[in-house]
Image 1: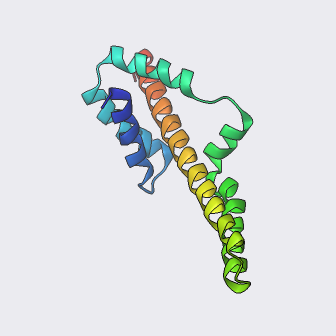
Image 2: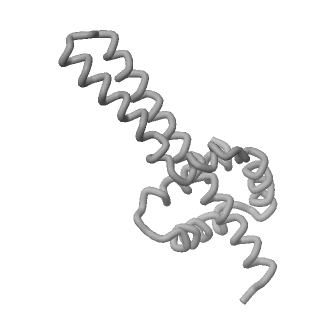
Amino acid sequence: MSQLERLLLMAEDELTEYSTDARKIEKLRRKIGISVPRKEQQEIKEILLAEMPKGQLAKMVEEQRQTVALPFWGIAGLGLLLGISMLQPLDLIATVLGGFAAIKIQQWGWKLEAKRLLLNTLEDIDQRIQQPQ
């Protein structure tokens, strides 16, 4: 497992906790400061900046992944309802496709949010090094 993957897993772990972004960054900053040398931090930051999508859709999925996935959950539910009540197996395909699309959108949003948290943490580390208090 590469250092970037390990840091992304740490960021995803922080996302599971209910706390403010500042608290998440603070906890992640300590972990990164202990385990990753400064030079690698800069390399990882450059990789993350290059990997982050710049489009409007990616930004919307990152910030509101559940809202973007909601219509697909609706399609899945409606397909299930119609497939069972009218005994039409083709409607069950809509259930599978809608559910799959909704899950993939939410997974993509989760990964984007973890990358953003890691990027914000690395930028916070840079600011603290440049301007010690």
